[in-house]
Length: 237
Image (cartoon, rainbow, N blue to C red; front, top):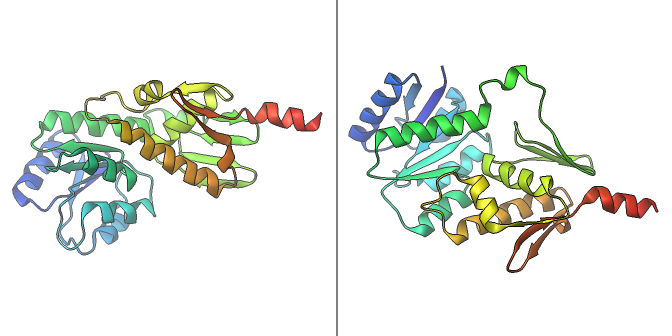
């Protein structure tokens, strides 16, 4: 049974949502002490986190960053704040999705199930591990790890989808609309800044690998990841 950590200070809403998720087969732990959200996360090690933005002591963005320093599990924000900037900030701080209040419980359940499938995969344990290769760059999309030149970084689920799409067409331009389609099935709240946030985060992680120059912006078209295999061949010649 998969577990969910619910970080919501509205006790009535938290209770109703918890009850609904339990009826649908999940274990749910509601955070009781909002001063020690990370401690509860580390103790429970949940498969997914549902997080409000407005919280006592520190806001959800703060706790999202803290959790991201320990785990790449899916983090879904649930909030009454519905501006585009709030969504961008959530994604910038490491969230995987953003659900606005008031919401239908069925929508929350569908998103929870969708992110759990993508993050863990029902049959991942019995299938050979997937790998995507571009010269010396290697992506493990099932565990969100990118390797290059003997170094590795962890990616979020959305970052992994973005990198995989670019690596699959290395040397060619991938349009912004195509990247948005691959990263989000439901695009009704996605604005133009959202993809920019993820591109910036991926560039930062490529820099950590010493590969900041491999991702290029093609103005008016999209993005291109250099074909590292061809470049290595040219260098040998």
